[in-house]
Image 1 (cartoon, helix red, strand yellow):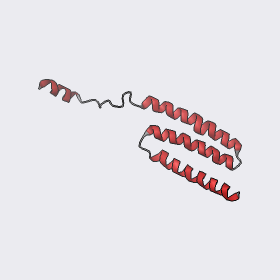
Image 2 (cartoon, helix red, strand yellow):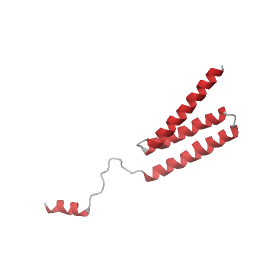
Image 3 (cartoon, rainbow, N blue to C red):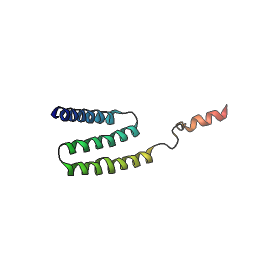
Image 4 (tube, rainbow, N blue to C red):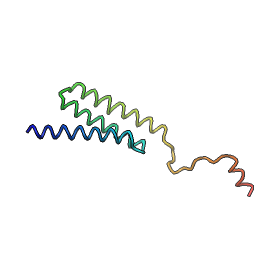
Length: 100
């Protein structure tokens, strides 16, 4: 029984490290935010495993809940409206097209 608990703790630790690495180095900002929220939920489980249930509840509420919602709201405000839109061309290039 003890070996199963140690295996669970090691897997939890490795998953937390992998998720932390992925949330920092992911190319997509949205994916970074989602991985950060998942990391907060795994850390909540880790705090529960250590017996710190009050810290686990605070981590779930603040770390995964409020912070995740604020990050998603900020991402929603800064993302481009049309992902396929081309960047604006300088006025000189627009004028040159009309002259041809």
